[in-house]
Length: 425
Image (cartoon, rainbow, N blue to C red; front, top):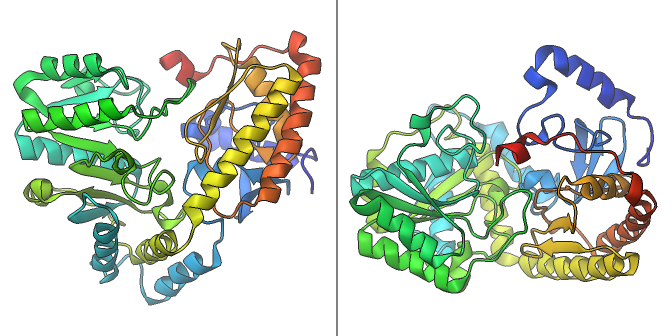
């Protein structure tokens, strides 16, 4: 079935979900966070495409919010996963694959002398927080205001269900603002445990920004001067900015880095990597989970890292990102729209000028969806190595038509229901 067909199966699942799932959906796919014509439920993915429960197939620029790096249902990675399932997955203890995967990461990531594995990005960032506090004997964290580091009570972007104590001992600075960073570190004083850094400013709803080299270097200097640990949260950006940690491209090495999403091409595993300075503290904290030792995702992770090392995937998706950015800019200008593209080309975000409540963004995104391209109106997107130049050209053709759709409707756009995340900022 092509885009634009019936969505009866999705609507039926939504009705059923309302009865048994609070709000009908939660998290980043919660009801109201995307245009109403976007599908909530899917049945499969192949390469760079996803298919919803009504059989409509889309070129997917969300890549499952990041996990899809080498293509949905990648035959090499999934074969490794399935082989290990046949031998054992969640066992009483780990298999030797855990040691192999740690060795692979240590060989690949410059600052890393060791690795620990978990399941979600939030697991990894929480482990990093605990390690830093154990290493320093201090409590306070310095974080960039608006940065996303997970969904545990200490870092969730929404206050519902949390207490003031959950976010105690945190001082915030403005990303890329050295004076603000220095002031936050001074405010933390002798209690500073860690400086947390995103690989780039990837806050939702606002333009993305690359890290300023001077800002990154100053964060490293301040951590060294105070005895705190520098943590680079690469859960989102890992392997899409560099094969090393993201700040390595600026010559800045963290003490700890956190990884997730695509490190096993969508199979559930995340990691905290660290240097020898933090080894004793990492060995001291108690962290675990029933599925943290599961072997199948580790087998998939080994294949994913092998492909990252041995293929030109990063160069190819970088080139595809440039092709997409250039083509979209040309088409937006031709249609007369101020259309901002920010973030790395491999992880773009699209926003319209003069669009405070995202009416233009929602309209354009829905028009793209109708043409078979899944984009997001306020969250950064992702490119994957299964995409081709033909896919990018298909997206550009859809964008040209979507700009024309927006042009005809621009003066009569319905209001967008107040977004929960936007109102919480």
